[in-house]
Length: 332
Ligand code: UT7
Image (cartoon, rainbow, N blue to C red; front, top):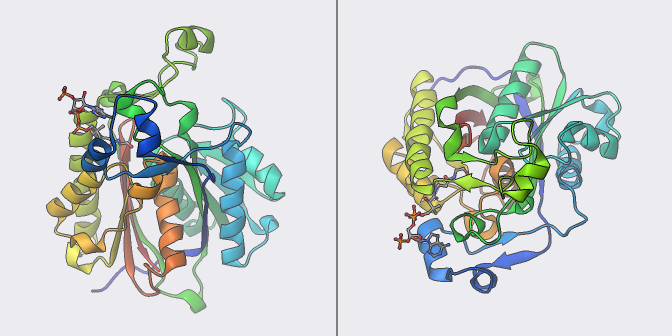
């Protein structure tokens, strides 16, 4: 196996989730659902829910501090902060600017990128572009969401699925010490014809917030089955494309970190891409679907627990509203 020489190296990761656990049994008391249905259809047992005073930027900052510590860097070393989120603190300024202020990352440019659940793969692709082109030395990428704030807690078809959390990664330029480690390749795609299938369409400039709230249009809306089919198709395509482009097969991948939306989507994706099921990192049972946060939480947790070992080939793959999807091949 001969791979491209990476220019962008993963220096550190971290994640943060709220303390409060909401179990399937708790949900049984809120809507007409049951633990068995939720586990069989999604693989989720519990998810984390933020207390009212917690903000997305605070959760992102906690994850970022851990990632910086892991990387052995100071906030002032960061040149760019990129946050992937659909539940930012405000319409503007960017949540990344709040994170910058909280961290004291005084030398950074800060911005958000909106690619729903594919947010972390997208921001990390941007980090690779900035670093490999020499425009930045250190980039902090974060996926952070408080989805509990835009979930309709009376809609059983969506409220059982989502959770809150944030994950972060620090990327730097490759040098002699970490040769052959880092981002091998990235893949991104979108299909704007399918926006209506998964969205929160109220509260922007099309449907102002007052009108949206009156008509419940500020909540997540999803056509589950359609999204399910598209997710399997798109994630399989993203895996197959990036592997083929780099002369690899599913057998070469050591750990697959898919977006944690539904265990059945993950299983269907690996069946189509010939990656062994035991290579798939799964934590959807404990955190539910945390959108842009799901992959960086899983990546950080897998590094912390030793589920990912130095020298391994890691494949990230994600899919979300837009639709947006993508993959990232990483040697750690
Ligand atoms: O993060 C971005 C990507 N998001 C995703 O990838 C999510 C994709 N979609 C899914 O994961 C699945 O479609 C769901 C988990 C959302 C739903 O699973 P499903 O197997 O597609 O169920 P369904 O929507 O076809 O519903 C089956 C039945 C329905 O009842 P009837 O019509 O068969 O009587 C629903 O009303 O299950 C019912 N149902 C529930 N029952 C108990 C729907 N939600 C619930 C619930 N508890 N929470």
